[in-house]
View 1 (cartoon, rainbow, N blue to C red):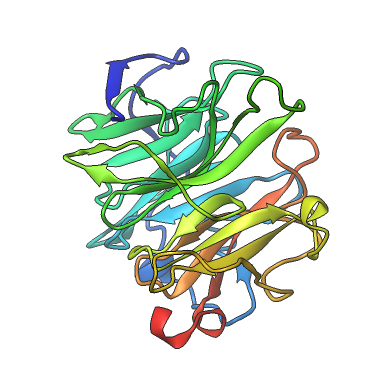
View 2 (view 1 turned 135 degrees about the vertical axis):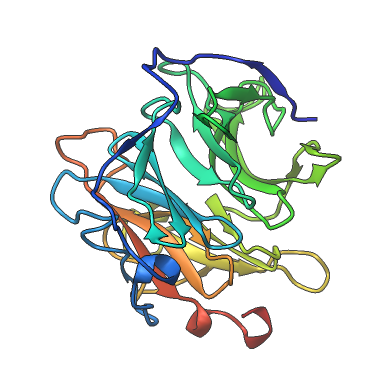
Length: 307
């Protein structure tokens, strides 16, 4: 079972509150008042969420199940904005989440933010969460690893509506095998208010973005290893078939993929849109790497029964 350990301070932090970034009012309407995209991906909320300039980094956007909370990463920090009667609040930095956390995601009920964090170079990434309190967001709690192989490093992940987690993980190969790492996409079912042991799925890709009803997912794959695709990493679609197995991943094509890195897929709560990150690197060099959050309508890419 994946149970929280004692609350730990992973970095020195000044306080648990939020820091405003923009003056309010910020935006009004569903999806921050943005005009919905068509079948060609476009930047999400340019000038509001995405700054679209060189060396700016916005990634891993996710909405809560009711669509009224949006969480995303910006230049190493995690930010959140919420829809109120007066409109969307100014994005606020969640200061209790340590910088350089990876793949942050708001929970379906909007009461927790989950993310992956490593204690240092060459250390595995493990899951953490911060919970909403009357005073802001709590200090991070480290959770038990979702995948129990020794020295597992957890990667990109997302939530289904039932709180089950779909996650990518890597771990060292067993003794006696050639050097390197094994990898896989896993499902950690949510049972009795915690996560049961993760189950390996037949999906060969990273950072799964699961649909709320778990009927399909979008993942990224390294095109050098696949020998195909448009850029360094592309996004692929797989659907869960009637027999419970996952279909072969299908490249989503040039309206979504580019010569750059596409990753960090998340599906909107109404299943209409795919959100993802496009970047010229993995964010390891702030003076060089640039990323924006994109969104695209899924209708053209899904079989009718999955829309």
